[in-house]
Every structure is written in structure tokens, then in C-alpha cells.
Amino acid sequence: MRDIVFTRMSGWIPNVIREDGELKVMLAAGADANHEPRTFTFSIGEAHLAVIREDLARHLLLWSAVLPLCDDAGTRGRLDENAAVALLDPILLAAPADVDALFQRIRWDRSRLIAHGADIGLLERGQLCAAMRAATETSNGKRAQEYQADRRRAERGAVLGPLDAAILRYTGQYLHGATVPRRLPDAVDPALLPEVLGVIATAEQACAGMRIGRDPRRGKRATDRRDWDRMKTTVEAVVRRAHPELVDDAVRTVSFLMCSEAADRSRSPPMEDDEEAAGHRADFGGSARKTALSFTDDKGVEKKWLRDSPRTAAAEFWEFVGDRSAADNEVFTIEDEEMGEGIQLHFYADSIARITTLRAGEGSSEPEYGVEYSLVDGIGGYRNLVSAFVRGGYAALEQHGPWMSDVAEFERARRRRDAR
Image 1 (tube, helix red, strand yellow):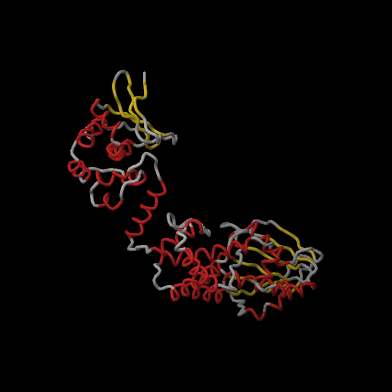
Image 2 (cartoon, one colour; image 1 turned 120 degrees about the vertical axis):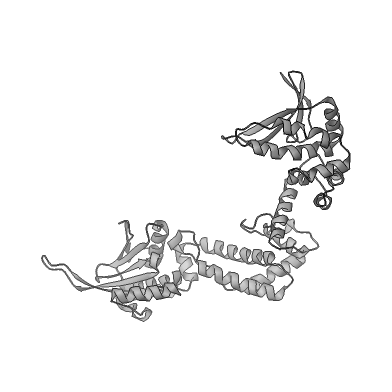
């Protein structure tokens, strides 16, 4: 038989129950192997219950000290009830100075106390009883998260000024640097918001006219890493010159915001608009000479493009790459069967081969092909080569060399590049 004797407003603060006539503290902590909350109990006396009823601070201190014992129990172990009971008198019944001294010797959950309003300065000086005078029954988990974030920054030597903190709050990255940044003006102290917006304006001016294109090699929504790094470097350099007082965390969150927004803009339009923004639209004007093209991947999947297609050949090809490209599918081919020529893109090696038919097969004889190789400089290089081939075929690629017919020579060139 279990009856609740005392409970507080927050359901997570330990309750006092009477079970088979015995007073016990009951608390939920941790989870079992099925991720269900675990519940622990340990015995207390009437004197302990009286303090728990009347003194919120002592109640919370007890909770903070017992939680590490619950962690020790893991997903299926038993609570060390003797250790829990041994905490009762020193925390609930001892003088404040003795309580503070005890917490210098034991493990305790700092975040739990901060979430319930503890004075952080006093807490860090070891004055726990004084720190808990401001305690509240309601919990503010965000306050504890911010404290942990500040501690992580302090461990690596980053100390935020008011403007730094305001910028991180504006981008939503105060708690977690990996969070996708957003614009959250309501999260900033109104007195600091004009300064924050001034920094943002500096960053916007720095990257005006820059864009982050898509990289279909890594999926339909992937972005060009080089474009991202170029914009990041530009924004951070300008912001640091204009606002030298900002710490690295604040500068990085501003560049992350600019890059994320630019990447989102590039993902939204269809592939034709993406090509146009990248400056390749003019290349498609001469593609009328191509009546049909065949796209294939390393898995044998094929897609046809015809001259009367509503979309450009390059846009269709990159859409095909975005749909099909994967870690085990990094070789794509464009073939013009009518002209007997094609290109093969090797994404795993940042290289390309251009292929032309030197002699058609007759009877039982196999056709003879001319194959030349070239190194490619990122997705931008691939886009230029695909556009040139779509526009003018094999011959149009000549200016994009050097082209090497000797495989050994090409491999040496590739190794030299990779070594750099």
C-alpha cells in the first residue's frame, strides 16, 4: 500500500510517500533499458519529513545529492539506499556551514539547483545554503542549459561579453553551436538589439553578391563546400575588422547565419534557376545541336534527354546526379550516341574522361575509342565541363584541359595534386 504524504508543484522534485507504514522519499531518475523512467525510494524519519515540508532549499539540496546515486544504479541496478539515508541528517538537519562543507566532499547535481533558481555566483563559491535562498519550486531548464554552455565555453577560454551573448541569442546558438542559426530578435535585450543588427548588417554587406551553389554529387539539397568556405572566410574577415571586440564564437555564429541562409536560397529554386544563378545559362544556348543524350550511373541506371525536353540537358543531368549519387555510386556518364562521343565523371577522384569513337565496329570487330583524362577542380569545374560538352561536344572540351591520353601520366598528375 503506497500513499503520497507530501508533494510539491513540480512533479520531478522527490515526493514523500508512506509505504507499508514506512515513510520514504520517492524520486524518478534515469531510465531503464527500455528508456522508461526509473523510480527509486529510500527511508526517512518524521524529523526529515518536517524539514522537507518547510524548507524548499534543503529539499532541493537533498535531491541534488541523491541524483548521482541514481545515476550509479544505471538502467537496472539498485539504489544504494544506505548511502542515500546517510545524506539525510547532514543535509536536512545540520547547520548551514556543515551542509556547505558536506557538498565540498560529495558529488551533486549542480544543474538541478541552477534550474530551480540557485544563485550561480554563491553556488560556485561553495555557499550552497545561501545560494538556495532564491530557490523556486518551478524549474527553468533553459537557465541550467545556459550555465552548462557557459561552462563549456569557459573550459576552452571563451568569455562572452554582453554583445557576444546577444549575438548568440539572436542566432539561437547560445546553448548549442551546432543548431541551425535563425534570426530571433525577440530573444535579444532591446537595448542591445541595435548593436546586434549593426553586426548583422556588416556581415550582409560583406557577402552581398556571393552565393552558395548546389553540389549534386552529395545529394539534391547538398551545397558546394567551397562556396560555403569562401563566404564564411569573407564574412568573418570583414566582421572581425569592423568589430574587433567580438569573440570568435560571436563571429562564427554570424558567418554561419549568412552561409545557412545563402545555402537555403540555393536549395529552393529548380535546377534550371540554380544553373542560371551560377552563370551557366548562356552555355545552354548552343545545345540545340544535341538531339539526344543518355545519362548513366555506375549502377547501370539510364536516363534519356531529348532536344524537345522542357528542361536543359545540363539541368536534367545534374538532377539525375542528385537523385542517384551515393558513396558507392560516384561515376556518371553523358553520351551522345549520334556523334559517338561522351564524357565520364569520376567524382571519387575529382577527374573526368572524354571519349570519342575513332572507328566504328564492323562485323565482329569492336569499335575503337579515344579516351583522354583531365583533373577537375570541384563542382564548379564539373559544371563547366558538362556545360561545354552539352554545348559543343568533345571538341568544345579542348580549352578545358590539359587532357592526357596516357593513363600512367594522368595518375602521376593526380597523385601530385592530391599530395598538395
